[in-house]
Length: 35
Image (tube, rainbow, N blue to C red; front, side, top):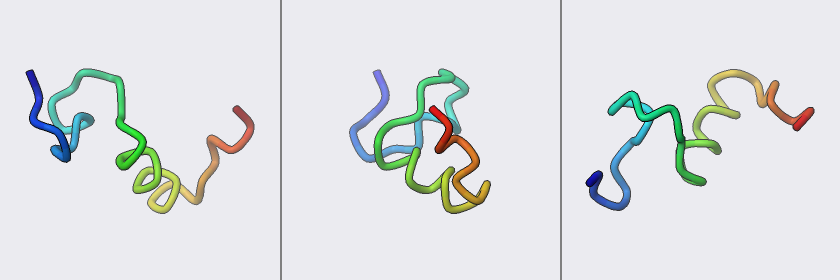
């Protein structure tokens, strides 16, 4: 339902897109690198 390119995390779907993941890694210091 979310348009491509739109921040999924803002919709609260709990499933960030690859694009958002890069943003999250940048904002959170890429602490999810342990995945």
